[in-house]
Structure formats: structure tokens, C-alpha cells
Image (cartoon, rainbow, N blue to C red):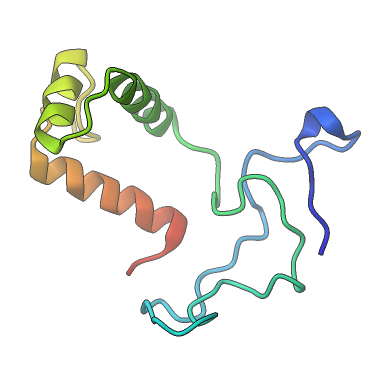
Length: 118
């Protein structure tokens, strides 16, 4: 198994996403060891950003940056996070203010893009 290092440590340019990412073979989560895996470790190179199928959009990056700032303020509870997002002025993808429900729905949707549907 080969491991690709960040581009700063190598001569080749490594993309910020995994262009070889395959969908889950078994989209249903299973408790058995090794089941539901994307691919065996000997079948693919390990590269940085393994689970990212594409670059994040500008909106996804803004949301991630804002969440990092919120967590840096030691705000971890869902109501606190939602209130902080609204204070910061970052809206939902469709332009609405945040609620606990639409925050969870948005993160679930973004997670399914990277990890497949549960």
C-alpha cells in the first residue's frame, strides 16, 4: 500500500479531493468487521482527502470556516451552534435562517455526499 504525502513534500501535485473514490459496495451499515468498506487497502493508494469526491463549494467552505470559529468559542451544543450561525449571518443553502432541524438536515446531506447514504 502506498501513501501519498501532501504536495509540499513531493514533486507531484496531489488534488484536494480523491478522484478515484468509489461508492460504498454495501450502503447499509453493518456491524461485521470489514463489511461496508469502500475498497480494500491493498487495492488503492491512500491519498490525502480520501473521502472527498470533489472540492468543497464556496458555501461548504464558508460553513466549515464558520463552524471552526464557533467551536473555537467552545460552543458545542446544537442550540448554541444554531444561534451562533445566525449571529454570524451565514444562512442555509436556500437562504433561510438556521434552525436545529435544518442544521441537522444540512449536515446529513453534506455527509451523504462524502460518505454515501446510511
